[in-house]
Length: 384
Image (cartoon, rainbow, N blue to C red; front, side):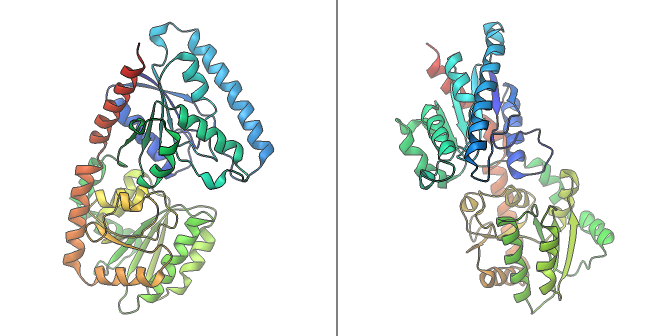
């Protein structure tokens, strides 16, 4: 099937690292591996994050012009060369889809929205325009694919038939991480040499961008938690960078009895060394959609300590693949870290369970097969 793919929040070609971009790329890859011909319909970014009504209107007008331009281009092609389905990833009130509903309706093709969300509490706020557009797009969708369970209660009232809502679990290619997990000793020694680390200490790992807002808040919770872990020394490897790096580094100044290593940004290949070498993945996950790094860590065989926030329970099973605590509770976070660092056997059991669960329930091949079934059914229903 020929599929037009669009991500209004951030195009998969965007060079700035982010979980959102990574999920978009994984969706493209899953659709391609399922045998579909996928084209990136547009790199237009409709996101407006400051509540500027005038800018939102300009983005709407530009989006509608781009939609008309796309439509003219598609209509100039032979019918068998045109998209047979439109697929939009991650539309919401700050990043509405001004393209897909307009184009798909004119072409008479199914419109599919994956990881769409709707926030009724924003109905009379600064993003009312975007919220209205998100509601209209969701209501028009032939299929809405939810990746996170907490989105579902607000999506269902917008659909005239609940069967139009389908679910798939967040996913990744577990093969990319299982190889590293099988080479733990070599990769641990490599990082020990690179950063002058003590291999006898428990190594904690966190992977996240350093941005103001919830990311910085997470780092500060983690720093306070480490300060409370006083009965033994730990090493924390921090992979990430961004405009709030100075504030992040300052936050960890309180945890002076532990070794903190700021490793900066790492390529996906280099990051596999960190996952393979660490003993425990830690991230408070304040207001986290679900966290790709949490899934990556588990695929590499790491137990996780994370905040029980939004979509995190969709990827981390408390007391099976990790420990979930309240996102802002530094004391509970510290206790969970201490418990698992002091119990290597329990930690390893959780890591093995995490890896098995990732392979069985969150692998790209299963996701690709599920997406293929969903999209083919949507196409069949739309075909006269």
